[in-house]
Length: 106
Image (tube, rainbow, N blue to C red; front, top):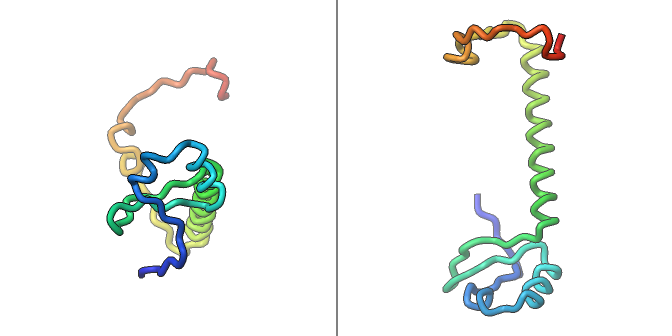
């Protein structure tokens, strides 16, 4: 699925290389992102740190929602599938770690 982007803010790579920090910050403040292009080809996208952090927070929130839905689905399953310790942890399941009664967990 391709989206059509209308009036997106482009900056040529040569302009980016020669622009001052002031010009760059101004352009970034005016737009949520800048598309870096070279000869009509998009090379990448520059985001402000705040916009990047917002996107990462949204992505983590969506991952958490998906994870919670998977948990609900598995809890409500009529015939759940069970996994052995070895299937889950692989070779770590063979590690005979001793329990330390003084580690603060008990």
